[in-house]
View 1 (cartoon, one colour):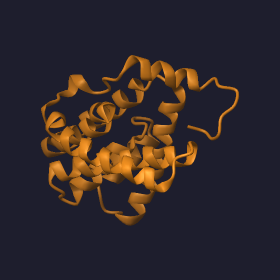
View 2 (cartoon, rainbow, N blue to C red):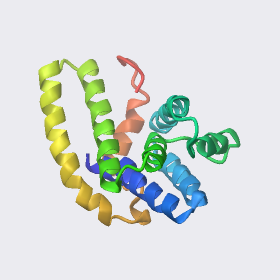
View 3 (cartoon, helix red, strand yellow):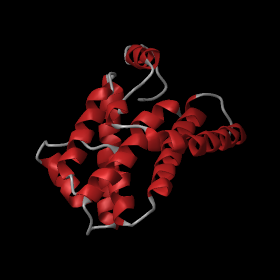
View 4 (cartoon, rainbow, N blue to C red):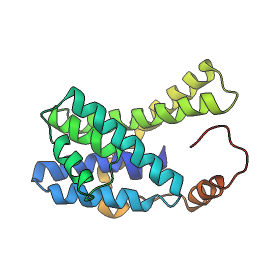
Length: 178
């Protein structure tokens, strides 16, 4: 969850700041920063794929939003597509309060990670729900930290986690694509 503070959580908060200031160029710069800060190729491309899929879904549901501008930037190769940016743009357009938007994006990321864990390892639904309950508490506690972070904190991660993600790309036997 700590790593999510410096990616999904912080990027959501920054998108709100940038959109409030009319600084669309900073949203696109943030997109590039998030893309480049993922050292492992699979993590980088996976985040891009998820972001673009989310963007297609959200544009279908909410066709009259700034998501169209984001899709155009991706089409023009000015952006890559990141799920937290998609979510933040949509929640901003829907006038969600900032803290609620950040919490929503953090919860979504945690839920996705736990769902993958339930599928990947022998972890039952009950244990998955217990993990999610703990994650929700940590997400709630992390909101204060996220509100104090600045642009310079984007992508701050644990070096060992990044190394392990890169090593994981080269395993011979894997259950599913990361």
